[in-house]
Image (cartoon, rainbow, N blue to C red; front, side, top):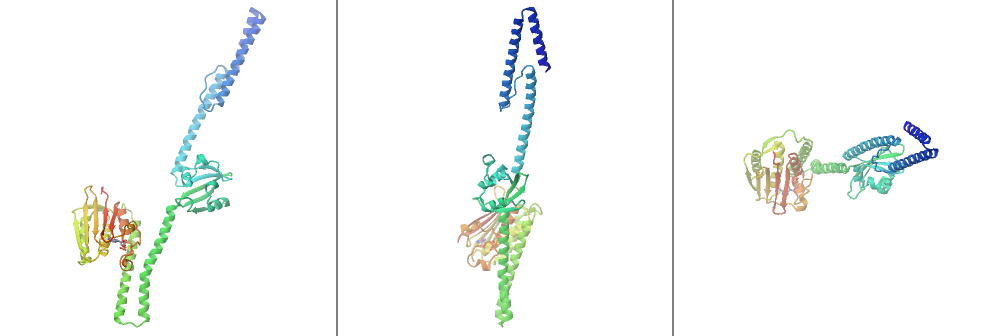
Length: 424
Ligand code: ADP
């Protein structure tokens, strides 16, 4: 204001001076010329300012004179503040996106008409939706599963649903609708495929364990009822008692295997580990196998001295014995079994059991470590193992950071190798 006032005062004084010294016309012309220049300058600066305001690139503007100098410096400092705020907002947004990316749950924000407002990367991945492309479209156009549509339209806040066949890869997704504000809702979604699988496995496991225990129990009950109800001779009675003993032992083995498996699952891998001399352990087992085998097979042991692994002695004994015992069971009389315990050139301890027994079809090999899995051959189901031996071996192998390699060919034989990590 003061600058405009000084300018007008200076102009009036100059006009008066020119009027007094020359003529009135010249002084008026001078005044009009100066005012014209001033008006031109003002409109030039106005246009420049308007252009700058319209320009979205937010470049700083050049300095002007007079009042424009003030306007431009205020505008520039406003611009700087805006830029600072924008970059802060961008950083916050990026941090928020990173945080939501790390979350297991996907988050979807929708408005009251079910139009997509925001989608976190995890939700984008789970639901095959893109924040950029699908913003503002209805979520019901993307998820058309009848259960989801019914759930969303019912507006059941805080309730959850699980949909298992939403995508082609058959992922099980859990959805939860949460209130957000008056105009928006949040849908939380998470992948519960593994959890569902575990539930199914747990149910299967209980069913299989009950079935395995029920079979010998039924046999024992049948014999006991016969002994009580019918007059039988001593020979027959002894035969029944002997059979009952076999079934009782089978149940005992099954329960012990189940207990061992559950103990292994619960055990902390880092605890109770010592340096175990598996050469000595294999020597111990060579004596045991001699007693059990009673010269039915030729069993050869190739044991290198002082092969050490970091682990739990009892568990290692159990795993090694399971493999030797299986070789004895699944190799016909007169067969050959070779057991080796050595250090490889790369410094890995290995324990190998090789036999020339009945062998296993290739398509069974991947399933051998599943619980209760038995290859249904030559009555093995009735008379031999529980189907838990190799799952116990596998569990122990994993607890030791080792790997179990199975090679087999029907009627040629099998080779089971436990390969320990090099750094133990
Ligand atoms: P089981 O208690 O029935 O022996 P395992 O888990 O130890 O259970 O073994 C699973 C199945 O793998 C066995 O039922 C058997 O059919 C097969 N198997 C295991 N070891 C051998 C082997 N050395 N030779 C042939 N088949 C084997």
